[in-house]
Image 1 (cartoon, rainbow, N blue to C red):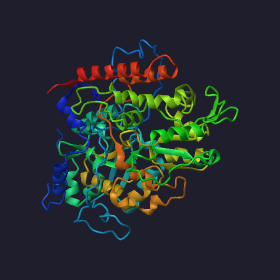
Image 2: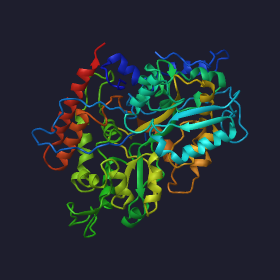
Image 3: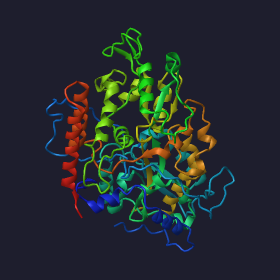
Image 4: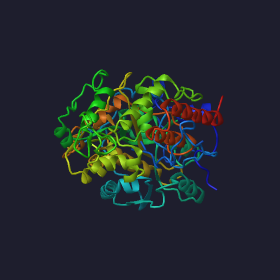
Length: 545
């Protein structure tokens, strides 16, 4: 029987290795130096392995808790098979390192290498386990496959329809047991370590060295999410950072000022207080009263100022950090949620809901238990929502009004938002490693990046494409595309813990927030209860070693 990625307890050392997030600069420098060496091992044999779009909540809270018992806690923890895109540090993304110096200049745009078609002696079929991108990237895959096959007449690329959906990791474990594992693997940072350990993927650094692949051009925060024990087991494909999506028509009608061009490094401007007032003014009740007007009826709202999933890690973890707190200790052994900063962060997240300016769960879940916040924005029931670049293809055709994106607001301590990535890797058992790597080269050089980034649903993670016109100058909306890459500077990745979408911790959080909204619990009690659930998990699963 295939094992779940998270079926065994984590040692403290293993958790730190799995969730290393941003590697020490000396380690990264060593890796980059190695990529420039002239002598490299032959990449024709698979290495012997020795492990978004940030995912929004997949289920609504199931029951409201009472004030004395904020959350009903299941007795058995449910372990996820599709891991959230998360990582371990709560620090802002570091500045990128210099691009590789030994690379060639292509004839087309500003890439560091010129794509060269694969050398084959006969027909080859490459199979791709596309995971969640099988549907979300359908148009992208159609173009990628066609363009690659046009350049490589003897190669056929097939997307594996079985390696998608729920229990994705289990399907891959079954494939490797049956000897049918695809050649290219969709992955995330949470999959990187278990996929390495189970030979689902292999180290791609030898291939990068041999082909002068510009590893150093990748944003190191995202690149390092794929590093496991000094090996590269994921090439990040998109940087998803949570920003504000704003209905420009509603803003204009309400006379609200939005700082579209913002000095985002100045934490004294565009703050939580500013954002609260904007949401207040944008909210309209059924009688046409705005939230800042006398007689406003918070119990009968027609348009909310914002729709925010406050139970999404990419919202609540950054909120804690922006107030000067921390979710968990650096060594992943102690919950730090129940601190003055943590309590204030959750008071901030729930106050606009209680005041009627942010859409409550009771409304969002009537629209969708997974996409309610975006559906409210698309349907004109919320003026602002918080989401990532990957949501744009689902917003553009479904909203009537003009809209754009803006930077996230700053908390009392600093400006922070949630951030994650998805990516691809070479199968650990591929019989055509050179061809598989050639396909990845195509994806990550100019030909593939033009297709991926022109889809409206991805942000570049290779610095040479940050200002590329083929995505920056796409017909709006959105127009303010610089926000998607500038926000990398203050985006964070939460500790890599496998329960952001399921299990007692998530249930306690969801039930507790619902209880606060219903007036059945206090913030202090909910935070204490959720923190206790986090500590229970850490005590049971993180070995002190």
